[in-house]
Amino acid sequence: MQPNETTTSASGRKPDHAHEEALAELRSHGGEQREETLLPRVISIANQKGGVGKTTTAVNLGASLAESGYSVLVIDLDPQGNATTGMGINHRNVAGSVYDVIMNDAAIEDCVEPTSVRNLFVVPATIDLAGAEIELVPAFSRELKLRRALANVKDDYDFTLVDCPPSLGLLTVNGLAASDDVIVPIQCEYYALEGLGQLLRNVALVKSNLNPTLEVRGIVLTMYDARTKLAEQVEREVRDHFGAKVYRTVVPRTVRISEAPSFGQPITVFDSSSRGALAYRELAKEVSRGATRRAG
Ligand code: ADP
Ligand code: MG
Image (cartoon, rainbow, N blue to C red; front, side):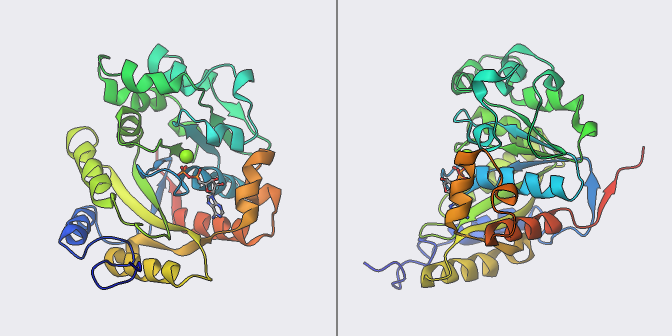
C-alpha cells in the first residue's frame, strides 16, 4: 500500500479523531508562538520516538544560541550519551554526570563541562544513567530530582536545553518537570505524528501534577528531504494541525549534519556555512525571539 492512499494520511495516522485529540491538547497549551522569551529558560527537547532529531536539535540549537552570545547549558538526559559525545566530551573523562546529579544529589555545577564552543556547556550522560530509570522508582520525590538540582544553576545560563531520552519514563518526566517549555522535533517521515497525542497527554499530566507553568513552546520539523513528496505532505499536515506552534524553520536532511557528531562538533563549527548550520541558526533566532532577562 502506498503511504498516501486514502485510508491513511501522510503522517501515517488513520484519519480518526486522534489528530483532533492531539490538537485539542496543544490548544490547551496555547495555540500561538510567544512573542516574548523570558530568560533564564529551561527547555526540554522531547519526543518518545527515537531518531527524530532530539539530540541533533539540542546540540545544534544550543550551539547556535551560544554563538549569538547566550550562555547555554545542555543537559544530556539520554543514557546513550549522544549529546555528550556530539559536543566533543569523552564520558570516560568527566568529573561527574547527570546520573550523579539525579541519583546521588551531586551538585550540578560540579558536573558541568565546557565545550569547544564559547558559552556552550554540557552536563554529560554516562551509561549508568540507563539504571536510573529503574533506580528512581522507589526514590523520594523521584519526578523532581532534576528540577531541584537545576534550581541552583538555572540563573547562570540563559538557556538550559534538556535532551530527553526516547521514552516517556521517569527520566523524561524529570526533564519535563524541570522545564519551562517543551520543543518537540518531528521527523518529516511516514508515521511522523504517531505517538504525538500520547506525548502531549504526558506533557499535560506533568503540567497538572508537577509543573503548572509547563508549555509546549514549539514543534520543529527535522530531516526534511525536499526531493520527496512525502516530506512536503508531512509538513503541510503538521502546519495545518498545529499552526503557529510550528517553527517556520525546517531543518533539512543533510549528510553534513549526520557527520558532525563523529567529529564531536556542532554543525555550526563542523561546517559553519552549510545548509544545516544556517537552519539551526534560523531556529535559534525563532526560539530566542523577544528574549529578555527576567527582572530581579
Ligand atoms: P534522537 O535524539 O531523536 O534519537 P538524533 O538527533 O540522534 O535523534 O538523530 C538520529 C540520527 O539522524 C542521527 O544519526 C543523526 O545524526 C541523524 N540526523 C538528525 N538530524 C539530521 C538531519 N537534519 N540530517 C541528516 N541526519 C540527521
Ligand atoms: Mg537522542
